[in-house]
Length: 357
Ligand SMILES: NC(=O)c1ccc[n+]([C@@H]2O[C@H](COP(=O)([O-])OP(=O)(O)OC[C@H]3O[C@@H](n4cnc5c(N)ncnc54)[C@H](O)[C@@H]3O)[C@@H](O)[C@H]2O)c1
Image (cartoon, rainbow, N blue to C red; front, side, top):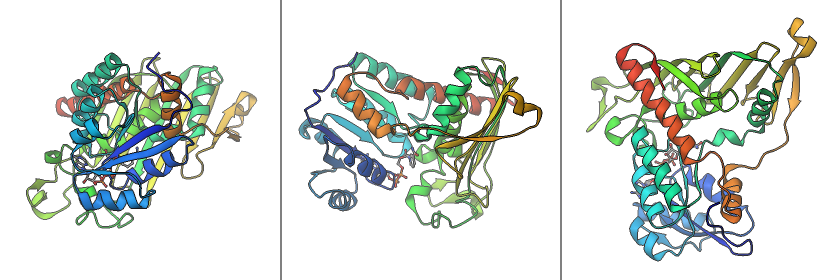
């Protein structure tokens, strides 16, 4: 049991990094009774001022994270900075005794992610990583069906996460928007599509099926600009990743992700096939419904739609965890497990062979 916050006490949250995704954090936290946006922090003071004004107008602005930790009087930090800052800023927050919700990927390598998980455990603070697609109740239902043995023994898995912002203007022009540049260059700490959304699909494909035992990966960085750089930044982070995996339960899977999936904005698919049944999810169609083929229907390949009851989102689960002192999922340990799979992908791509986890 972690230290808990009395139910009547307001939970004072600070958001650090006030770019695109921070708007989701602020909007969702402010919907929860008893939560106060107590501070915001960004190195870009103007952006932080505008952000504070947009989300209630009362949260004081900090440009120095250390000062926020010592003077902000907050209970918890939502770390929504670029990936390379997840480890250093979260570790500072933990050292200051703050509960922490960190954006994904938890870190940029497994060693840092483990350090974060251990530090959070030792400090006794609530720690969660934003694998946001767990908010899909269809995914939670899929995990329950597998756990309950409805699909029999799991044999074959197929999962993909498809985006197209490199081949389209669906989210604007990546060449002129800083939020895209830091996703394209290792000099910014980027781990490419793998670190950006590959972490989501690895979590998505292993939450219902269980841990991955080995991975063989192929990563590719396509030429996007003449000279393969933008100013001082080489455009060297991977844009496409193919993974062939074996799960601890013996099932085989193919998991892939790309930013070149023309025709898709942000699509996640999962198919799980077992000896007694199968399920499939398409988040473009629904977050709360999945299709199943079970029982006698497997002999007709007949699929039925199942509705899954709404599950609390990560912001609600984080606050509940602080209020009850009971650690929520996914925690930093899970973030570190996924980071281990990521490191294995880079090793496998380099060696040209499968790597055990
Ligand atoms: N879970 C999800 O579904 C999801 C979706 C989108 C983004 N994200 C993650 O959220 C994070 C932020 O992504 P984004 O798209 O909002 O990026 P962004 O570039 O729009 O915003 C990042 C912000 O961090 C600020 N920043 C940089 N260094 C800082 C520092 N030292 N202290 C304080 N602020 C600092 C920047 O000025 C910027 O305002 C990334 O880690 C990304 O992977 C997660």
